[in-house]
Amino acid sequence: MNAVIVDTNVIITANDEAEHASPACVERCQKRIKQILDQQETSLVDDGWRILNEYKKHVNLQTRKGIGDLFLKTLLRNLGRRPAICTMVRIKPLDGSETDFDEFPTTEALSDFDIADRKFIAVAIAYERAHQKKATILQALDRKWEPFRKAFEQEGVQIDFLCPPKNEA
Image (cartoon, rainbow, N blue to C red; front, top):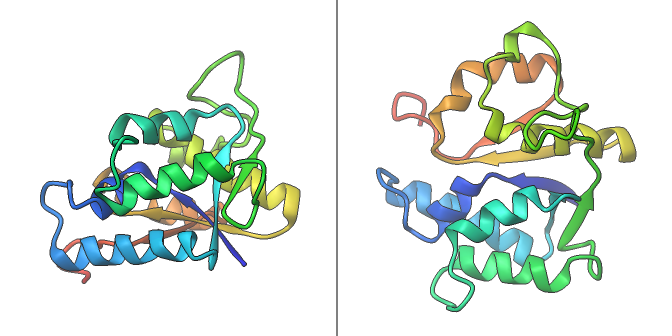
């Protein structure tokens, strides 16, 4: 089974709440979330709840309105009980930081990468080290990742850009 780390913007887009998301982009995000819900892929989160807490800021757990809302409810309900749906991965914060991690590559090419998104990269690398299998990060509309695409490839980090810029679609 494939392991994936879902960037928060995929959930927002799947809920059809992202500005500038095309219908095709929304559909691709919904399809990937559905694959996790159908246990075709396993969602990975960090052991410090950084990813889950970020998700919680962007969904409504009191409704069944969107597939992104259902996704988070499902993760929370199955965390620790059904690893086929959600698996927690241990990452090591550096010096008590909530944004810098031992697993994040120290290469100069990634030094300017968004600190708020480093947890996703750290989970992918920690998972590979622990399980000798790669996990793919699902990314939708966050264009800040684009300039780092080649550097991540060189580090062996797999990113699936679900909603590429129009000139790549």
